[in-house]
Structures are given as structure tokens and as C-alpha cells.
Image (cartoon, rainbow, N blue to C red; front, side, top):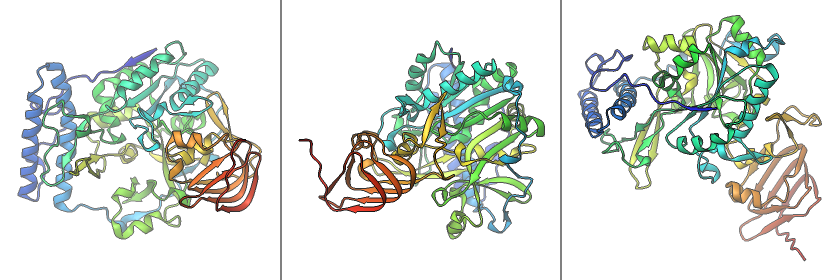
Length: 509
């Protein structure tokens, strides 16, 4: 069964937000220019709303613009005050703030599952991998997409434990139409699928601080989804939060749709229930490949998420160091829904703003104000991190990642990727595929079959390189075809600790 949530409509820009107590007059602006920008923005947003004739549509639009306007005024306020994180106050989290996964009791009872819902963040497109449409529709293993694998996992979970865990997709305006069409194919599956949309915010002109769209129906590229921190506002405004609570669902497991390691873990869920934690963030040990990932810190005695975008330039190297920040956020989050309701009712949600600078196709500089879902950790009681095994973080952001998950390093069991027990090392090989492999279509044409990599540590491939079938790679393998050269790795080759360069052509006779 699939359900699509529509926003409930009880907020308008003109009659004041239902749960935002601040108004323009109460915001402490340091400069007249900030106050003027806020006032102009308010007028522009009201003008946009006035162009919508349908009352329900206008209410929904106003509701989204309320959320945007609050972000915008906070941004102006922080900008005028020069608010920055105080680097001296940042401490590593205490032992109580990060619990090792190995210390969790093994839970055999699945009774907590009756109170669980699972949500995947499904707002992204597959453009970076050269695909059209939602990223979740890319095939990743055995002709199955990210969505197929997730649905199969939840279906198996429900069947095995005789429960009904709903599967929720938070779409963006970029992915909503396609996703609704795609999920129809699961109608006969034993999974309740619910879709809802995150907000749509107007891009802001960097120079004038005016909204880019001039009408509510302006082209899609003039709007943006404001990051996954919008989940709280969108759950609350859509009525889905209340609906889940009415159904007896108390806990929400949130993860990125492209993280194939993010499966329901009964031990973590039981730990959450037993410790009365309102928010748990799964973190894992940082490697040199993870230098950009957000990390948990102790800030003035409070647990906080620190994202790379918040780090002052002079401390960037510090942030990337594995010495000072040993863990990073996997974005697998366990959240108490009653607590979300309380924080939203109190209008207390105050997530750090991430300013995303963009340049449009026409060359105009714009800004997007975004927030991160994990930043809410500071608002919840008994919130802490759990240091989980690396196997729970298996994102597919590039074809290099796709190479790993389609290889013999993993097998597929009920929609879940399981590490091949014949792999002798705990770590995953480091894969760097060059520009010629960047798009999925190009990637697929360059391999007759994905090489065997059980004994591989590191692979770098650049240039015009193709692989035959049943190739085996071991140790460190570097293959470089310079400009104008081509290398065909023959079928059945075994490359162990080799550097391959020059020209090698193999043509079918």
C-alpha cells in the first residue's frame, strides 16, 4: 500500500506562523541593511503568495515560505553579528556521549519493532553519476535499485517478526513525481509505503538578497530543497508526525537512501528504548577518505554536530585531521517522535544554517540556506552517539562506490549487502576510478564483469581503460592510460601489486 501525504494547512505568512514566535520586530538586527533586506523579502514573499488563486495551494505555499523566512532572518541576524563557532570551546565527546556498538546488549526480542517507522531521505537526483531522475532509482546490484533493496529489507523484517514497520520516503520537488510512479510497483508487497515532500525554498540573489523566483510557478531551477534538516518541519506540517503517533509509532530510523549499510538494527533500537534516549546518531571511525564528514563534539558541555561548512578556514586542516576528530556522522539517526512533537510544539528547533553558494547556468551568484538533520541532536534529552562498525556506512556516491558494491566483496541477503566472509581484512579497499568511469553508462561499458577484489587494498584507474571478464585484482593496482593511449586488461588476468601504463589493445578476432 502506498500513501502520499499532503501538507496540512494551518499557517500563512500573513496571519503569523503557528509555531514560530519570533517576528521581524523581535529579531535583534545589528544593521539597518539587514532589517531592510528582511522587510523587502517579506514583501516579495507576500507578493508571490498573492499570485496563487487557489486557497489551499496558497496556504501550503505560505507555510513553506514561513519556514524559509525564519531561516532567512536568522541568517541575516547571524551575518550582521558575525556569529561564528568558538573553536576554543570545542572538545572531543566524553565517553558517555559516544557508546561503542560492541557494548550494546544483544537483543533477541523484536517487540520494539511495533513502535518503529523507517524513513529514507530521498531528495537527491542521480545527476553526479550521469543518471536522470531520483538517485534511488539507479540500479546498484543484481538489477535492483536503492529503493528495491530498501523495500525488500523492510518486507523481510515485517514477515520475519510479524510486524508492520512502515517505510517512509521524504522526497523533494525534484524527485516526488518520479518516486510516486516508481513506488506503485510495490503495491502488492507487504509494506506500507508513505511518501511526503520536504519544503521548496526560493534561491536568493547573493548581491541583492532578493528571491530569484518572480512567480510561484517560476522554473524549477529557481528553487531548492533546504537540506535534510527540513525533515522536522515537513513531518510536523504535513500531519505525518501526528499520524505516526496515532498509530503507536514512537521511534523513527532515518538514513540516506544511498547508504546501503543503513539497515534496521534491533540492538540499537532496544538500547534507545532502555536508555530513554530521544536521539541517537550512528558514528563510525574516521579514515582519510572521510575528512569531509560531520563529527560529534562537546560544545559547552552539550553534544553538538559540527559540519565542515561551519568550520572557519583557519581550522579546516584541524577538522580534517583524524587525530582530533576520530569519528564522523553516518547520518543513520534514531529519533523519538514524541520528542520531535514536543520540540516543534515549543518552536524550539534551531538548527545551524549552512550557507551553500551556487552559480546558476546564466552565471548569476545565488545562495541557498540549508540545515542538517543531525544538527537537532542538541535539542533532545539523553542524546548520544553510537560508534558502529564501518559496515553500517556503505554509501554509493560515485561509480567508485558502485564498483565496490557490485563486486564479490558483498553478497545480497534479503535486500541487505553482507560482506564476503572470505575477505581477510576488516577494511574496504580504496577505489579511485577516473573521469572516463564517472557516469554509470560509461562505467558499465568498461567492464565485461566486475573484477574479483577479495584481496585488493587499493585500485586507481585513469584514462581509457577496459576490463575483460574474470579479472582478479590483489594488493595495490594502478592502471594509467595517458592521453591518446588505451589499455585493455585481458580476461582472466591476475594483477597483484602492479602498475600498468602505456598501450595495450585487445581486439576481437
